[in-house]
Amino acid sequence: MLNGIKKEFHIDWILFAATLPLVGAGLVTMDSFSGTGYFFDRQLVWAGISIALFFVLSFIDFRFLRSTRVIISLFAAGCGILLLLFILGSVIKGAQSWFDVGIFSIQPSDPMKLIVILVLAKYFARRHIEIANIRHILVSAAYAFIPFTLVFLQPDFGSAVIIFFIWLGLVMVSGISRKHFAATALIGVVSLASLWFFVFEDYQKERILTFLNPLTDIHGAGYNALQSVVAVGSGKILGKGIGYGTQSRLAFLPEYETDFIFAAFAEEWGFVGVLAVFALFGIIIWRIVENAMRGATNFETLFSLGFAIFLISHFFVHVGMNIGLLPVTGTTIPFMSYGGSHLLTEYAGLGIIMGMRRYARAVGRHTEQNEIIAA
Image (cartoon, rainbow, N blue to C red; front, side, top):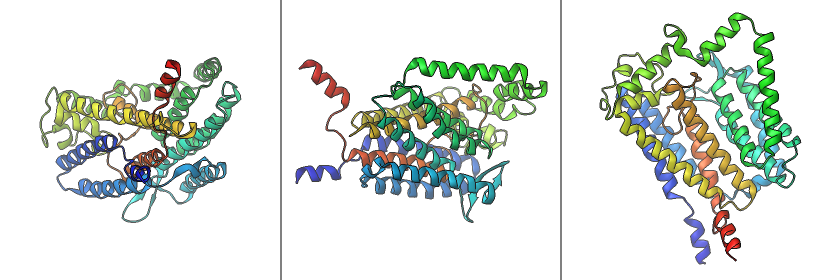
């Protein structure tokens, strides 16, 4: 009876609570800059739906996801929907990445990232004994390459990069031989170098260099990156205050509600606010990894680690492009950026982890290992 009662209180409240200030920070930033309440009102609705989804999923027993048939069906359905985008998708800002259903749009690449995590977690979990075989790098890469290509061709380079990082991160944590991985990486580097010196024309090289370092063309491709860097720097220690971010209010900073919301937030809240955001993300990743170590099987552990990699990739790519260290790729920051698709995906991932937590180990694997060593 007591064990059954405990299962009802399986929510990691520290993890859940750490997400709420980030959602709130995004909402406040959208409201202070737009003045109309358009983004604030719509994002508030998406936040409510996403949190409700989190709690619904937390009460589902996800052991059925260990089935190969279920995973392959999800993967096939996800790839099919991505293909359908090329026929029925709406073109927004040059990318055919959304289904327009009237009052809102859906971006399938976001939930597809969760499916990629599930597929790779399933693949690596079944082959943990023979994981050193180089064949598993190639096969897992093939699973990731299909959605990567479909997303890249939309074109949505930011989401394609996140899919690549998910694969790369799970390869690193799954126990694959470092020698085999290094050999594969070397082949990739040699291939890129060959393309650079023997295939690309001068104008193609110039486009790539401008993409990698947009600040070299501040009146063209690098304009947005420059305004973002100026916004972050002008926030200084304590920020300009809510509603006083001049870069966004005077329309110098574009897409402040999505691609550059970190810069807009940093301008208002300053270095202190940025530290708080980093601390909250640190808590979220810590709690996800802690739950991963309690996974009932390798599948649950790898899924949680893969989801942590997903959040880390989004966070650092977004922050990197907002401070001028990475190319501008249109990547959102988890929980803060405007958009229902990514917010639903993030809370769905956390909800799945909470569902897995219902049948998790009583203690973490590191604790079990320490007990064995002590014995």
